[in-house]
Image (cartoon, rainbow, N blue to C red):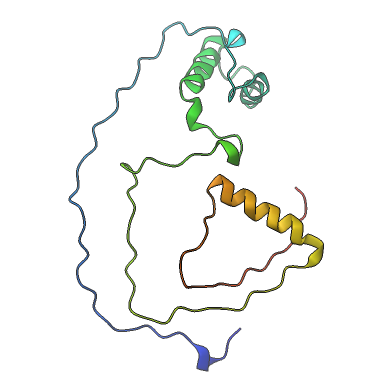
Length: 161
């Protein structure tokens, strides 16, 4: 909690109009036709991403008698055609194409960047925290900062589950 004296007040300024690229509709991709008689899902050729265990996990989440055998085979066929869109863990996660989600610029007013003193990480979880942060950087969830800002991080150990 902070006292009223440290309250942040909005700044009344006007920004120049942002230069934006004109809207260009993207061509719709060709969607392949679905097979009328998909290959049997029990004979699915497993890949590096779609292993037997992962296919079984997908099938086990479908309620019994909800889909017929042919519908289940079609489901597994569609999943197999789009296996790059499914990430089972952070190592397999990708990013969206920039043509669909272009980068953007956040406009700000001139100000002094803030720098807050860091909160020390308890020694009992320091190595685990550093490993977690390195893994997040390697997976692309975090990136090294290039800004002159520094924000506090408060690390807590969450219960398993």
